[in-house]
Structure formats: structure tokens, C-alpha cells
Length: 356
Image 1 (cartoon, rainbow, N blue to C red):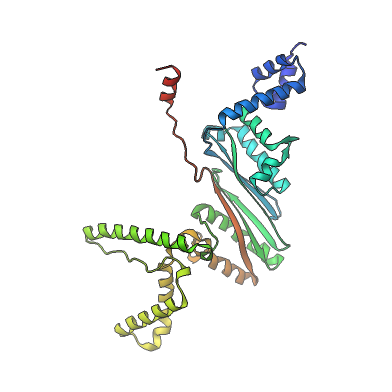
Image 2 (cartoon, rainbow, N blue to C red):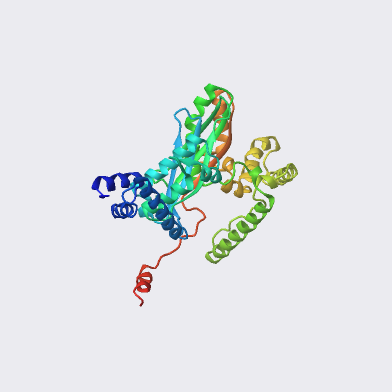
């Protein structure tokens, strides 16, 4: 059978493979389109297998959010190089994958791999994309969030460079509160993208983690103080604690007694202590919850108003609206986070290929 230009074009459109690959496939199967597609699929699988051991640490974060803020999907799709991450075919692939997750309400990678897309098992579909695009591609992570009730809201944000993305879910007490809270919650998504919290609340921090981080913090300040001593400058104070989880009522009572003793030494009239102590206790808590401020969203200083924590900003908005707002979960993805990028020595690689 004659292999026409139209046959080659149709096969290329159907598979995304290169023109010469399509022509060779058609020649191998005597022009049978279905067999040619299967031939390229098998060839694509072989290509994908060769590329699968290459680290994919570049890529894009993609968000799909419905206009009613009732559900959202977020994915991290990785490529080997930033060059491919900017390729229009790769961008289209990340959008297609995220829409697939969104439309099918897929909760995890296992569900994704077991699903079908365009009539093909997802894993096989992805391997064909690897063959077409020419680099290893990995759907590393995904998240799906859905409003759990009428007054629940889902918000999302992707940074302009598509390297960081966030989805967040909150429950409100009424439609009016949900509507009024939307802008704040959207801004908190932006806060999360910038400030990288790892937990919602200090209550989520493991005690061993807090102790380990406190010792690291203490060691860091001690090291800084060594340099400050050398320079003859004022030393930094080493906090007694690192998290609100360590500050019991007994600790606060003991600190209050110490502060009263200090006020007495300073000759401050006892009748004004009640006006001074709350601010000093607040300062004590802030100075002794540095781990919370680093890792727990609710304890972080809100980027749009550093006079408030995120939790205070939420509570103030709820009070303004006369309702209740509760952030119940969030997910933050950053491209390549936690992956070790392999450094390629191209000169060495070329020399190796030339037998030098």
C-alpha cells in the first residue's frame, strides 16, 4: 500500500509522534492506521523506559478551580529540563492532566494511574507523551478539594511562574459569610505560597519535632552571639521555649510573677500593672513561639498585615461579617521541592560518546 502524505499527517495528529517515525510505522504495517498507532505505542513505551531513570525535577504547577469555588484540582507535573517545561505541548499536557483530575475527582496518584484518559490507561497515555515530547515526565503529586457543605468554599492560587500553587478549603456559617470571606481566603492562599507553612496549627506539631527544632534554633542563636561578642554588640536573647504547645498555664503564671517582680523593681505603681502585663505576656508568647511562626499557618504573621497572625486576620474578618470562618485544610506544591536535581556534565558526556 502506498504511504501517502495524508496518512502520515493523520497518524502524526493521532499520536503526536515525529513525521519520520510515523512514516516508518506505516511502512512497517503496510499502511494500516490502527496497527501503526499500536506500533508507535509500543515504540513509545520502549523510549519511555529508557528515559524513566532520568530525574524529572523541573516542571509546572497547574490549577483548575470552578467559578463557584466549590472544587479544585492541583497538580505538579515534572520534566527533566526547564526548556521542556516551557514547551507548549508540555503546558497543554499539564492542563489536560489537571482537568482530568478535576473532572473525575481523583484523590491520589494510584487512582490517577488506574484511570482512563482518551480511552487509554493513564500510565500508557503518559508514556506516549514521554515518547512524543522526548523527556521523562512524571505526575509527581496531585490534590483535589471539594466543598463539603453548602457554606464551604474552595480557593486556589498559582504564582505567575507556575512553580508554586495552593488550594485551600474553609467552612463558613452562612452564604453571606462565605461570600464576604472569599477575598481574604484568596489572599491567604497567596500568603501560603510565599511563607511555606507546613501545618495548619501549632497543635499539629509533633513534640519530638518541636524539641529538635528548638535545639537547632538555640544552637543557631548561640553561634550568632559568639560573633556579636567579638563585635562588641548586644547579644540576642535565647528563648526558653519554641512553641505554644510548650507554654502551659503554669508557665504563663510563672512568667507573670517574674514580670510583676520586674515592674516592682522599676517602681511602677501596682494600679497600672493590669495595663502593662497583657502586652508583656503577649511579647513573651511571641518570643517563645518561633517554631510555630515558621511552620504553622495560623501562627505566622499575615503578609498583608504584619500586626496580625493569619488566625487573627481570619477571626477579625469573621467578627466583621458577624459569622464564623474555619480554614480546615490546604495543600501547597512547589516544583521540584524535595527532589535532588542531577547535574549534567555535557562536556564529559560528549567525550564519553566519542570514546575520549
